[in-house]
Amino acid sequence: MLPEIKHLGSNLKLLIFSLKTLRQISCLCKVTNVPEPSSFELTGSPTHDGKGQGKPVNDPCWLRLVEDLYMRLVEMKVLSPATALATCFKIRNAQGVQTRWSVVMTDTGIFKTSDIPTIHRPQDECGGGSAWACGCVDGLLQCNLDAAAKVDIDWRAILRRGDLSAALCQEIVGDHSNTTAATLDGCVRGYTGRTAYIGNKAMLMTPSALHLSNEEAMDRTIQTMGEGRVLAILRAKNGDLAIARGIELVLRD
Image (cartoon, rainbow, N blue to C red; front, side, top):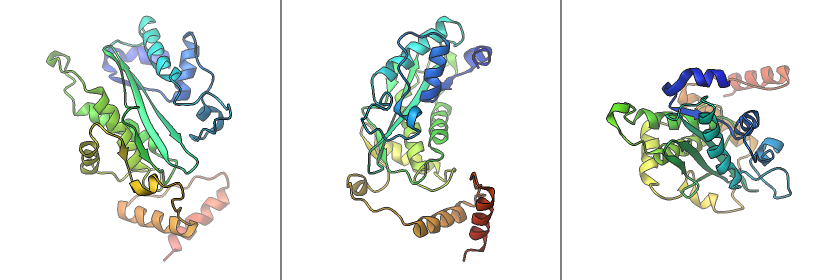
């Protein structure tokens, strides 16, 4: 991976690592004081129970690691100083309410959205990371990236766009997003400088919020797929079960 990053040089504007990859690359590059694996890496769940299963994702050590790895990659001449290094974070409580924020390190400093997090209850585990990256890339494309123009990039705004894009994506069931540019722009404007609540705020703040039954969840999935005109991709360890579920979806009234 490192030779490929180096080859891109200053043409690479944004490099995104997951928290797990961030730690692994830091070990590979011999960054000092690399934290133990995160709770998310060890358990596969964004819910941290506080029982010592890995380093909490909201620990300040991860912020320092982003900064240290960026400096190390630049020092090794793997990363151009013109390339930003980013990662996103999420933590979930026992009621399924998730808090999102993100961080980026650039040649002008480190920027983060932890003080203006995005709070939501994911309807599906899939799609959040890709949607976050898409939101950030969309934000970059709206900036003037011509170096000669000397335009300062608003990195916090770019991160916030990614956070909101991820949360909006997970408002629907399935590994896809039907979020429009108008919807995303509206959320960005509506939550400028403050915590964002995606979905029903009252339900997000209520521990005893209702969950959909399996039947209701299936109906919502089919409705979303029909409105978005998307192709369903069924993923399962049991192939026969996936085929049976596909037939059920096709024959369902």
